[in-house]
Length: 117
Picture 1 (cartoon, rainbow, N blue to C red):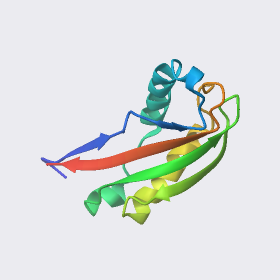
Picture 2: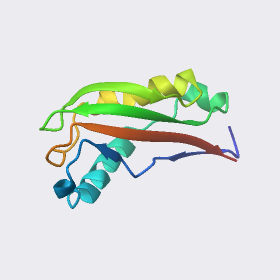
Picture 3: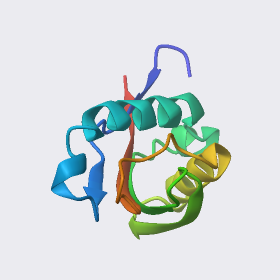
């Protein structure tokens, strides 16, 4: 694909669910840490790139108190079955996030794939 660049965008803001107000001071740093972990495990499937598929998948990720991922579900499709599968694989590869703010048991994680010429 000469002359074409692959670009991805990771939505840096995680929406924390079930988080008490007192933990909100901890969340920006934790969000950055989670963003770094996701970026380190991000990939753009070659088959989606060839097909020029783009989109944004939104995942609901259940966490234990130590950050272990106890469940993940696709809550909004990217519009591409390939990208949806990759979103789930990204979280599966991670296996564990940094220890979440106290009281956080579920996070909403948006992951975006975007191609640029």
